Amino acid sequence: MSKKIDDVLKRLTQSSFRSQFKLDEKDLEYISVRGFDTIKKHAYDFIARRIAPPVIKNDGKQTPMSGHPVFKAQHATATCCRKCLEKWHKIKINRQLNQKEIQYTGDVILEWLEKQCVKNQPKRKKDKKEKIGTEKS
Image 1 (cartoon, rainbow, N blue to C red):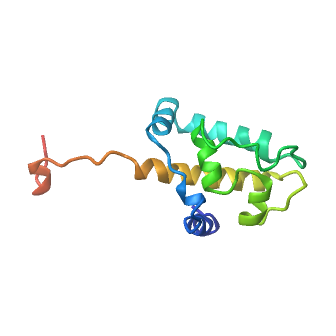
Image 2: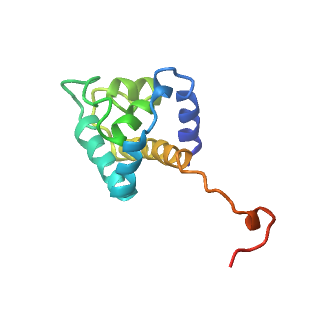
């Protein structure tokens, strides 16, 4: 992860609104069933259709609050609309996003999703032999 993405994700955790977004069981199952590559495609498709255009008629309202893990990630990472992209990521409004900005936006979303998936992995219990350092056959 880039330092820029790491820094912005840390800043976003300080926002009471942004930090309230978490993946629930349904979201985690959706990611597990479809696979992260599919989720990545969805993220870039949503960015291309809902965020990248120079003028968005319903800016600020184009990203639902739930219904897809990427939507939650967009709100958590302030990549949900052009106004939030400008405020949190310093990406200017009222112009087409360039390829570098689209890539960055996707990277932010995917990094947040990966962290949520890792954070929510079930804890594996160690058996007695593993605890004392012997290998299990």
